[in-house]
Image (cartoon, rainbow, N blue to C red):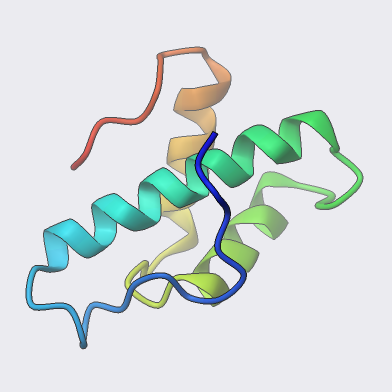
Length: 83
């Protein structure tokens, strides 16, 4: 399992390749989502989880994006693809 970052791992403004920054953020969010699935007490809802991920990754702009990923991962559509 990848090591989870404790602070923002990417930033669109400082990264020359925004696509790479978002892909790295998505991989980190996925790892954190897997942890959250094991310990659901940490976040009450997917929206709360998404807000926490937006605070962590400044290259993610909308909670909708993270909640959409959570929905897809919850349907067991596999590991996230880089978008």
